[in-house]
Length: 182
Image 1 (cartoon, rainbow, N blue to C red):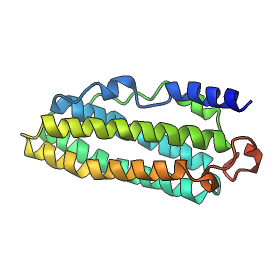
Image 2: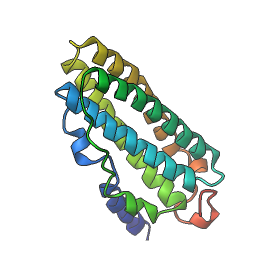
Image 3: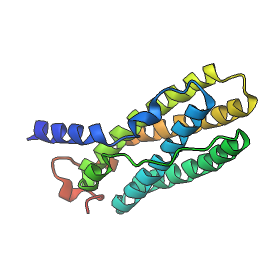
Image 4: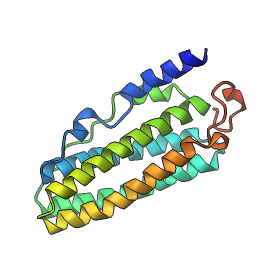
């Protein structure tokens, strides 16, 4: 039964992530800013869902609020930089796997979300570090990248920490006992 639950969560995670083209490689400023735009909007959507499913789980509420505030602030900086560089950002395209997470709750949702969030923040950090190496000639872009990387690192550490805290996650085998169960 436990193997089936893990397989189910793994299958759900395959579709719940930042849209595939968002991490297509940051070889130029336009691709970096569009990737960041998708990332910010996806993280705000994720934070909203976490907030709605966290119940009285204060650690997840705090994480959701932090993600939302930080990605909103990053979006403001991103939009200002895009305007300065005369770049039109692509419209946000929600992740096609979002509806799969809508059906999860309690510990299953918590596990799936935190696993996905760790993966996505690692990928975003990789993209931003690659962009820092490739786009260092533009001082405005460099400042944006240098301000974004520490925030992404903090989010990654937060998700990794919560992912390994059984008190936060509760029990996957008995989700009715979890604070986050809806």
